[in-house]
Image: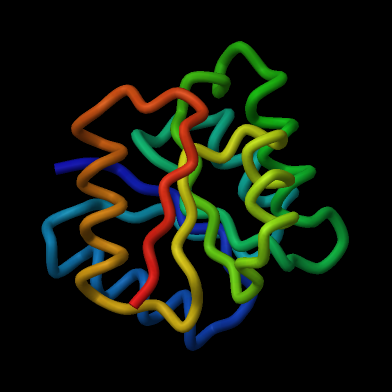
Length: 132
C-alpha cells in the first residue's frame, strides 16, 4: 500500500485519519504543523499528503505551495482536509496545488475514496470534492 503523510494539528482528527488509513493498509508519517510536514516530505517523500488547511503558523495552503515549488516534492498529490468548503475556498485550494479535498468532519468512506482515487490516477490539479 501507500506511504501517506498526514499534516494535522488536531489530535482527534489525526487519530481518526490515521486509524482509517492504517486499517486500509497504508503506512503513515505524521506531522502536527506545516514546518514538520515539509521536512518529513522532503526527507522521505510520501505517495500522498493529507494536508489540514487550518494549521498554526504556516497554513496548509502555504505548505502545499511550498511542496509544489520544490522539485523533490512537486509531484506528490495533496489532499486538503478542510472544515471550510465554500466556493472561494475551492479556488484557493486549486491555486495552491491541492488535487482534491475532503470536508471535515472526516467520514470513513469519503476519505478512503479520495485517497484511492489520488493514488490510482495522476489527477494533476483537478479538484474533486468529497463530502458526506
